[in-house]
Length: 219
Ligand code: DX5
Ligand code: ZN
Image 1 (cartoon, rainbow, N blue to C red):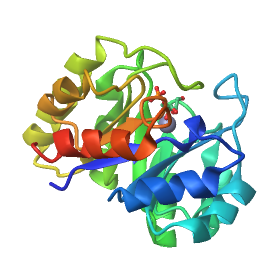
Image 2 (cartoon, helix red, strand yellow):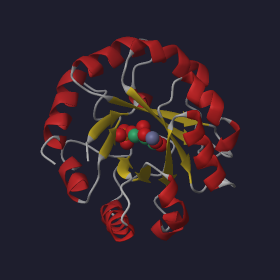
Image 3 (cartoon, protein in one colour):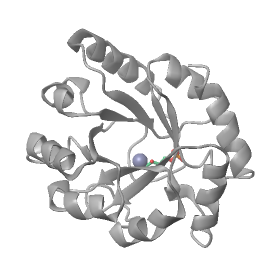
């Protein structure tokens, strides 16, 4: 399966976000992680659809939109219209999960499901056949710059085993606390998409992107 780095725009400098996205794309990167927060599912509020829409023309990168939003079914069409290519909803935040995943696919986007660190992996079983990706949260969602929760390694391995046992081919995305010094261990557990916010948007962004992608390309 193709592997990706998905830099989280949450850590961008919003006075020059367009410029920073270009730097990432010109460094050869193909995906961007876009965190939408509602202040209900998570304590913080980030940005919404108008921001996604306004950055869409800046780049051709795949927009991987992570909805940390209660009842995300309310926003699927408008999020897709604003430019999302992949839309992830949280298993803890949605009442009609299967219908919402089907609705995402109907819009032409790829459906994904995200899971918080304390939610048992088994909770995902009924939904795995409907998704193209699972987002394993390796921090408590809501803020960039937190430390990776060590138990996440085993959870990624568990999901990789479930994927093999069920004969499915969804991608495993891991989100939170990933740095250059722990990314290899995440990849070894079976991750396909690596989200990194604070580790990409600091110092030399292009150099960070190249270093991550060089490691990812070995898996
Ligand atoms: C956290 C967000 C993450 C975050 C990752 O709630 O979902 O995508 O931006 O940032 P880092 O890599 O700094 O943990
Ligand atoms: Zn995220």
